[in-house]
Length: 97
Image 1 (cartoon, rainbow, N blue to C red):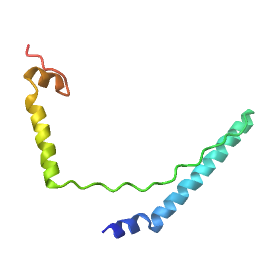
Image 2: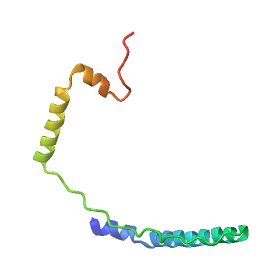
Image 3: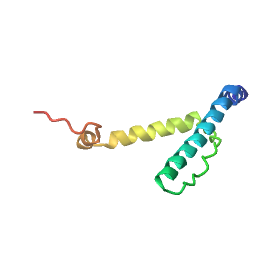
Image 4: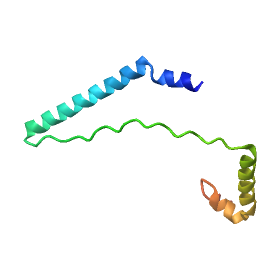
């Protein structure tokens, strides 16, 4: 499955899109420097575009880690008083008038 996804993202279409983006960036740099030159400003030095980085692998949690995480969350919610719950609401406390 992983190999299939890698082949999908390394396909010709994606490569063509990346090449087109690089060409358009170069064209934009040239047009910007041309306009600046016409206005009497020195040309700009553009930094290199960031290189694509591989994504870190997601760590799969075991069932007991997930259960412990849920228990901690439910214990934390249970310890909140009713006043704290109203303040913690996303829309703020609700008026009863």
